[in-house]
Image (cartoon, rainbow, N blue to C red):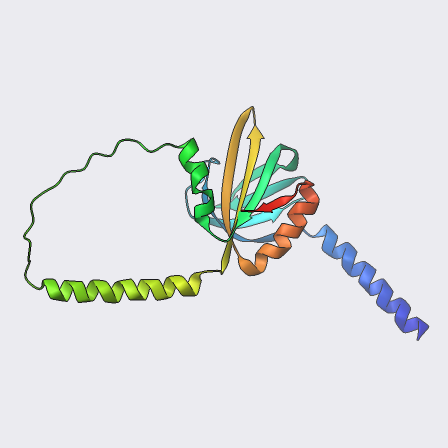
Amino acid sequence: MKKTLSILTAFILLFELTYAAAPVECKASYVAGSMGISINTRGTLQVGDEALIFLCKGTQYKVPYEQIAQIEYSKKKKAFDQISLKLNPPGVLFRSYHEAQLEPQGAFLYVIIAVVVAVGALIIGLMQAGKHRYLNFVYKEDGKTGWATFKIKKDDFQKILLTLSSKSGLDIQEK
């Protein structure tokens, strides 16, 4: 009995040391921010020992933890749209208008197709809701404030959240 207990204890300690040494990473998409990365770029988000790292297309984007000022997460991307509007205000939009027939041929068929497409999009949207989380962080680099938002699968988000909180020393807020 003592031998089994000591082997089990040694195995648990060895597992903890191995797990602590391995970097925590998951698949993520860069959805907004000021990092100079194209929108919806897919890559790997890694919680390293000294920095949060985004690996994509053979390039590393590192943000050291001491530069990170704030970390938030949300179930909806829209929670962070206000930041993008403040940093990148919209410009003036010029549109042109033209005359169109009021009742084109087959208008009823177009309405039916539009309703079917809208209902299909709504069903797909409801099925996708809740499968992702959005991680947003604000950092200071060379006296400038930067920010980034990443989309992460819900299943991977919990391990990233716990590790990021302990490594950065910051409280992560839900928005």
